[in-house]
Length: 314
Image 1 (cartoon, rainbow, N blue to C red):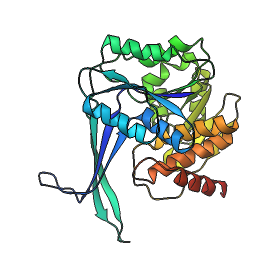
Image 2 (tube, helix red, strand yellow):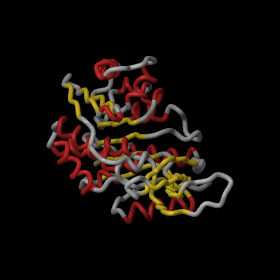
Image 3 (cartoon, helix red, strand yellow):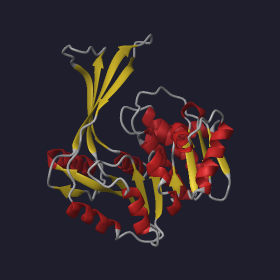
């Protein structure tokens, strides 16, 4: 079974406003409410690709109940720990819209306001750890996103240390220190983007070859497979057997800046688990990331497969 972890899930309230003006009353031209959080995004894309997963994490209050309802609506069986104090956060994503030359509305600017999230007690954290203790050999755990201030900053490392003898495949999609600190526990996959890779290594990576050399350094530090996304330059995958795979970018109009990286992780996992082929996995991951970038929510199966076919024709 695949388990995804979202420590601080949210309700994402996504609103589009025609030419947003500060200090004025603005009326929404479009709006959308979605369950949010990196692990949740991974679970939704996996579901779209026909693979079951169980989201873990913490949720509280009326917003937590709505997150659960929205997951159930998508036929995803979450196992969030119910917290007693506070509510799950509401994240507002405000898009200022303008009409382009072709008459279609496009996003000219995007701003975000992220909520704080609930408090998590030691007892509630222990319930979460007990859930992890049920994982067995062959299970997959996806650790994605930032850590709330109410939890130990070492929790990713603590989780991997706790599970290191269970032969659980662990995927980590996080930034700088969160990622560096877990390499000694040999995660199955890590997925920094090129800017995050630069921050981890402390130097600029100007070429694709320099990015690949940076990936090799992370692999030497313990990561089994390293997937680096490079925006308009596509992605490069360095596998545990030393093979290098490259993939270009999908053609389309970007309308969404949220969830593309999470979608890439999900697509890669789905592709690898179905075929065991790293090249196929990278292609499906790239198509999944593109599908979300070109959609107002998380990419649908139809959009993913359309882009997968597009990549196959290159």
